[in-house]
Amino acid sequence: MISNLPAQWDLEADVVAIGSGIGGLSAAITAHEHGSSAIVLERADKVGGVTALSLGEVWVAGNHHEEALGVEDSADSGFRYLKRLAMGYGDDVAMLNLVTNAREALRYFEDTIGLRMEAIRGCPDYYYGTSNDAVREGRLLECLPFEAASLGEWQEKTRISPLVPYAMTHHDMFSRGGAANMMKWDYELMAERLTQDVRCLGAGLVAYFVKGVLDRGIPMKTGVNVVGLIGDGERVVGVHAVEDGKDIYIKANKGVVVAVSSYERNQGFNKTVGSSLDLESMVFSTVDGAHFRMAGPFGGRVARVPDITGLGFHVVGEEDEEGKPLWRSALQPIGLPHVIVVNRAGKRFGNEAFYRDILYAVDAIHGGTQTHPNMPCWAVLDSQQREKYPFASVMPGQEIPEGMAIKADSLAELAAKTGIDAEGLAATVARFNHYAEKGEDPDFGRGTHVWSAWMCGDPYNKPHPNFGTLEKGPFYAVPLHRFGGSAIAAAGLLADHHCRAIGWDDQPIPGLYVAGNSVARMDTGATMQSGVSNARGMTHGYLAGRHAAGVPSRQLQAEIDRGALDAL
Image (cartoon, rainbow, N blue to C red; front, side, top):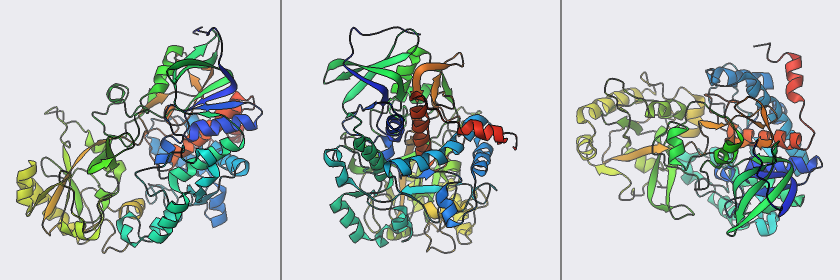
């Protein structure tokens, strides 16, 4: 263990939480509620982290809101769901720990900080219909609208998202046809909430936790860059940070919780810790792998599961808060009617309406030619799409900005302009159109997942929410780029069931905890399911805060004693 004690300490708390997303905030609150002082350090100038950029979904199997709706579910069923989909890449104990304690953490924060959650009606698990342990609705929760004025001076310092309509709930959007029917949304309600700064989705979720921190007088410091951890030769006892260009040393009497998200904005880490090339990203530049740099010198062990490579695009003219191009996920637009995705051969290579399918194919390697056959790729759409549906922020009937897409009067001309194989494209569109009229996809199973129709489709479209022919010119090809998983990374720091960081000797590193996307996804393995990331952050922070405060959770052991693992 390193010994690098400073000559003096500038600040002191029992628990130092690094990062102000749901993981860091929940750790600080939990530690405080269990009799320990806490402080939250944030590198950026706003709090909220990646949580604030999300749709705010929280996946909790067997939660009490399901029970109130009459939905039959249990943590056991949620555990089986994760285990099956983890494909052997996860760890049984870690998965059981997550589903067991997520329910406890949810109730805890509802009772303690006034978090108000409800089930997202009609929102199914990804694999509902293909897994006996998936449910039609109830596991996916979202917060009730939050009045940001209650944050006082922190109202402007708490992050909102430029990417999601954070003044609307899922109910507000999907009761009126979802993203495919944005023109039908209640814009009077949206305007009222924006005027009053009432926040929903991820911006609302994290605001509840910011309020919980403020109500307890827990200090939050922004603009503080933690450059390293401090040890006394036996345990981690503090942090070395830089604030306003000056070194400061903060003592942690009971523990440091690293909850700084992932490494998505660090291309070197994307390539070498993960296996993704040239990722564009929706997250801010501080999400650059600081957890590895902090824990590495103390022996923090890194583990990884399969990458989550996405597809995204840039609407010309849109910029993020740092003045850089604002990148948007293609998850929803490419699942709409009258849209397909093709590679340079003009062929489809996955189910566009279910990103878990198509995105695994993005970086497939053809061993015979040593190439990525599916990159580059394009979203190809026709004028029916432009007349009916938005494409991200480009509204129906609005011309796609110059430089965002290639436009042509015919498919042959589109192929010539893009370099796509003309014969391959013509054959692909003809085959897709034939089956689209029936609402079928024998090649890739588009439309077979209930979640796909709910999230990516138009419920008013016939014969199926995800199908529509491509036959009306002009046609468009939007170049798609590799896109990060909104900071949900392949690799992270290995942790035990109390969220203590684990060293290469398989032993906990005394005084060092990790939470959220800084943690290796052994509790999900190859699984990705909306709401799991926020649930992990909330649960990890809860577990780390309890253990650091000397009151560790006993829920996992109780489940093991009950035989939860033996029943598989």
